[in-house]
Structure formats: C-alpha cells, structure tokens
Image (tube, rainbow, N blue to C red):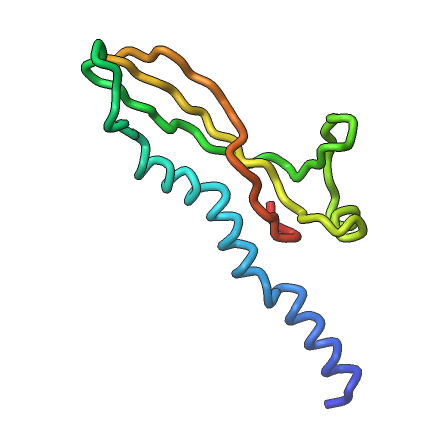
Length: 127
C-alpha cells in the first residue's frame, strides 16, 4: 500500500471516528441532563433555623441551565464570547450557569427568582 493511499484511508477513518467524540458527547450529556439530575436529587433544602411563626420553610432548587459563553465588558455590558477571543485575552471560555430558586413557607410558594450561580468551562466543539 502506498503512503498516499494509507494517508487517505487514515483521513477517511478519522473523519467518521473522531478521537475526542466520546469526550464531547459526555460533556454534552453532563450539560443537557446530568446537571439537572444533580439539582433534582438535592431539590429541597430545609434550613435548621427558621422563624418561630413558621411551621415549615423549604428552599426549592427548580431548574438549572447553561447559556452560551459570554463576557462582561468594563462598562458592564455583556456579549457573546468566542473561543479565539478567550484565548487571545487569556480568559476562560466559560458559560454562566443559572438556576431558578423558590422559597416555600408552610407549603405556599412565597418567592421565586432566577440567578446566576456560577460559570462552567465549555469544551470546544460541544453543543
């Protein structure tokens, strides 16, 4: 077999069998499903110290989601961040992680809000 033919066969093989595909698929599954499963396993938080006039107080962790990577500029504005820009500026290519949280007093929802709880690094070529 000639070197050119071997190179062509290797190129064809790696076109359909990426060496990092399993890593990307695992990362995508973590972001799309497993983060929410972790939150669901720890959905209700019952503080040990509650006001005397309250019988039951529960903080409920509802929905978690990850948005596209973004950067906050010096003026406070936010915009999309691309991998090359993150590399050039020597910052993490990361996305904000948001969660919906609600407070329940005596089994009645009193308050609900959405807040950013952190950031998560994003794998290149992931969804």
